[in-house]
Image (tube, rainbow, N blue to C red; front, side, top):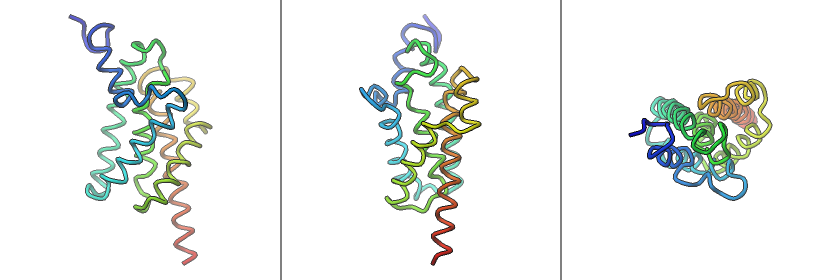
Length: 163
């Protein structure tokens, strides 16, 4: 019997988790498709959890993504395979953590996160280029999420100051 993460019967499970039930198999823009479940999770779940519980969920998603990506990467044949999108879910959940709750902020967060995930400003680029394991795969998206959170916080503050 193979251990979790070794090729064999467990690889399908790791692929399913890392691809968020197959969403990562989208034929184009898998990262964009993978971001959508995170936005929906935030919109429908965060109001009932409260901020501290939401941040706890973000930590749990980050850990789960790191482990799943660590084991799914070899199963896909590439450390940062395009099919791995649980990292996008974790990243956008961080990005929306402090945003006012509305669809407008959800959409703004979605686009800001995609921008930062694609452009990978430092230190996201460090994790993307230098940390070749599940943690690195996940952390470039988490950092993109932190940039998103900062941008949304500035935007919210400016809108509030305007009255």
